Picture 1: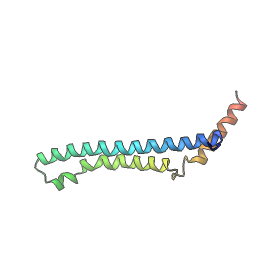
Picture 2 (picture 1 turned 135 degrees about the vertical axis):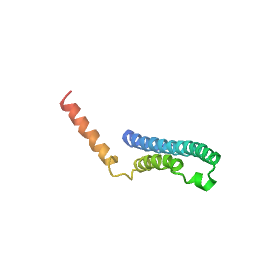
Picture 3 (picture 1 turned 45 degrees about the vertical axis):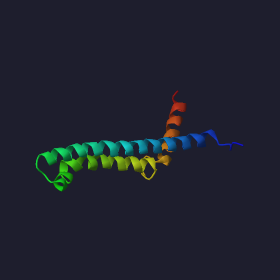
Picture 4 (picture 1 turned 90 degrees about the vertical axis):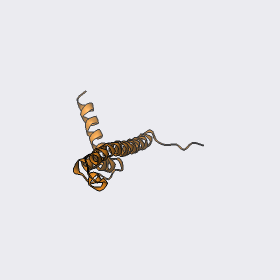
Length: 106
């Protein structure tokens, strides 16, 4: 027998699953793309006479990981609802506010 869930609860759960899926997709793309970029930069630096360690810790090799990593952390905080700003309560409050405005000004 299938459990009965309210449509609202189902939609909230579905939204959370979509946010998590989007985050994990973002994480996979982050790792793959940055690995390729780093490999190309490291090979280029090795061809320019640097040691592997010098090529690995070069700022131009690490900057994409750092900058994109900040965006990924913010995405994780949002997806796991750790981020205080724009959380579930804020969204619910904003939806209610917009619905009241819509009903008052059709």
